[in-house]
Length: 125
Length: 125
DNA sequence: TATCTGTACTAATTGTGTTAGTACAGATAA
DNA sequence: TTATCTGTACTAACACAATTAGTACAGATA
Image (cartoon, rainbow over the protein chains, first blue to last red):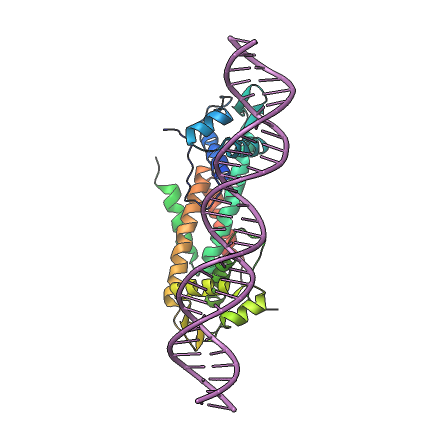
């Protein structure tokens, strides 16, 4: 079974699920930097999905800077993820602010919000 | 111009936008409790949308407990929103936990998370 | 040379949201 | 009663986007 996964029941398009999936794997270090990605056709055969759908995901992954594709050679995980890491951190910060505003709008007390933060950052060794 | 709104460019289906929109208006007190909602046909004419789409939204709104529909009489905003309010608070709490975990995963420091919370709860008079 | 690679393109298919149209029963006011 | 409103139910058609299917081309590699 592959580390790549798609869910047909998900509302999100398959190519978008795949780009998010690969981006996540790279950022979590589960795909070694510089490593060769499966070819478009191989990934398609592996997941039982049409090669065109995979290619659409690869194009988006290259646009994001997650992979680099070289015609005739293959696609490779980028060797520099620093920009990706800061991007992810900043978008996570924005998302946190969004959900915090929504929670306040829903009537949540500041104390409870702090408690949620403490629970997340607290219990890890 | 109506207080109800839909956005064709949005990826979310119109009937779903409408249910969220109405739910939000009710919870924010912009639609008086017990008030008569526009009829399915009136809302459809108002927004320039097919009545079937509106009805789909109304069915969902009744399932959520936001409105009550009575054949031959009309649809009315519920008179008791206490359950809706607690539901919204709890789902906001869950969402806040989710984005907090994602932020921590992205490498955010606890101090920055607290700062974001403080900014949201801080500046309001 | 043979076979891999990414890339590009058109056409067909599929699924879902939306529209179109009709119909029925209950409620209300003339 | 009659006329007209209401919600509800249903089938058929339409529109759009995602996906699939198929083919083709050029560069890289052994």
